[in-house]
Length: 320
Ligand code: TXA
Ligand code: MG
Image (cartoon, rainbow, N blue to C red; front, top):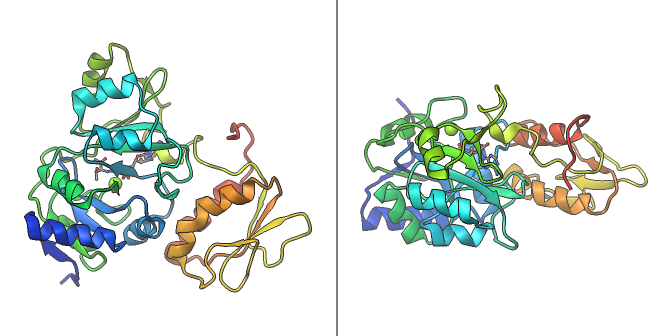
């Protein structure tokens, strides 16, 4: 028998206000969308977002999709344009996520975007998702509500089977009608298909009146892992107890740096601070030395990100 601590919440006023209360308290709540069940957290709260990765035991920080109630809410977070408007009119609410450049001071956690300067947004059509976003009144980051590497859940009982002992609650909204994740399109010239999904790319092309650009073969599976991922400009040295002269030090736990990911050695706090601290240190223009981070729990994803940032970047354009 699966150990279960998650509350199964009914999709009514009482259940939804409890779900919203969990979100406000920085906890993770699973909820139905028409594609798959999402594992939701307040997209503005770095520690809550870090708990998504911890809960799913994700070995890396892929950027997450941010769910909003309507187009108006979406516009607050990004630089909106005519192409986005055209696709939103045709397919929102629905199984389409749009990747757009972040607006200034939008308040999203840097962990949601994995430090990128773009964000994926979606207005889900499922009435329970719509109601939850309305009651909560803010943006909800949500990957599929399954442990990393397992299949995506399309019912509340799938969620309980996979994560029942690790989340505060799941809102039971029945079976998902679409059953596969949303299609992801990066808005650009031309718009690019990042992940095939619930809405056929042919239908999107019909609305756009032009073909979507593809990712090169082999890259579709994990768009979050590819070149556009944030890497600091500075050289990075890992597992450093004491920084050399000229280096700037990112600390953890006992090892206090110029900035410290978590003084108490808390990996959730460290994950929430990771991208923000790297950005800040990178601005100094000095090489960055990073204290050792344990390879347990969220430490896997933190070390994965740091290893990528420290790896030689020949042939990869550096971000400015
Ligand atoms: O149907 C869905 O989309 C489900 C439900 C819960 O809404 N959500 C979902 O989320 O599949 P997630 O977080 O597992 O999918 C995120 C995908 C990843 O492949 C990630 O790489 C890509 O979206 N992504 C997110 N932000 C991106 C960005 N700024 N640039 C490129 N890719 C991005
Ligand atoms: Mg998934």
